[in-house]
Amino acid sequence: QTEYIGYPVINSITAMGNYIYIGGSLSWIGNNSLFENLARFDKTTGLLDTTWFINCSAVSYISEIVAHNGKIYAAGNYSQIGGLNKNGMAEIDTAGFVTGKNFGISNSQNEALVLNGNTLWIGGNSSTIGGQFRQRIAQVNINTGSATCWDISGSGVGNVSYVGAICVQSDTVYTGTPTSTPFFKNFKAFTGNSSYINIGNDTVLCAGSTLTLNAPSGLTNYLWNTGATTSS
Image 1 (spheres, rainbow, N blue to C red):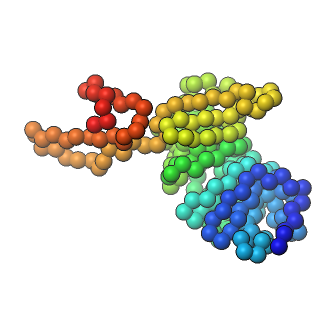
Image 2: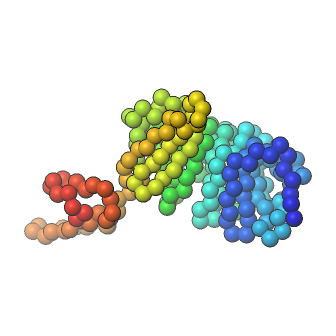
Image 3: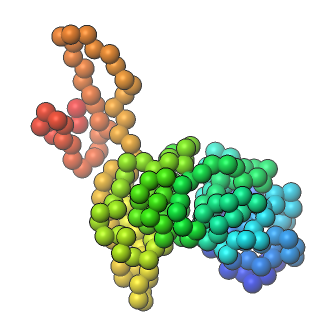
């Protein structure tokens, strides 16, 4: 079964459960003018799922969608989606409702979205992401929507109009920014651990006691306040 999409510019496709989700700049989806820019299809039948309806009448386009723990995360160019005020980033549940989660983004254009564990990397044209000063790109906690401590605002990334592509691999984040042809001419790599370092639970020590802290193995460099450069 094939569903037809009007003025088809599909920017992103992801799968979750029994459904395929699509996002883009779409004037109508599945021969239904009520559905635009964002929708899901049944994997088995290939038909538009009309029970999952997101009001996208105020959405210019959806640029990226990812799925995580029963939620869809949609980045794009909009200030309102599903009847709620959202600056280019929203969390949507399986029933088709936009949740109240606030990603604290200052502008309405978000072009890149990458899921990495329990964090999301968001790229766009904002100077505030996750409620913190983060120029064009940030890592946010997917559960809270708040920015992590990862911050490259002082790197000069704020001089570009927006971040349009992100790739996260190990401890390196690669970003693509718009410029003259080709798109990746202004390609930059920023190093630094892409996640929180978990050194265990808080521990109360009695006088004279000692505790060994262990950082994850496999990182490029280690430096403790004692001057030690090993992983523990």
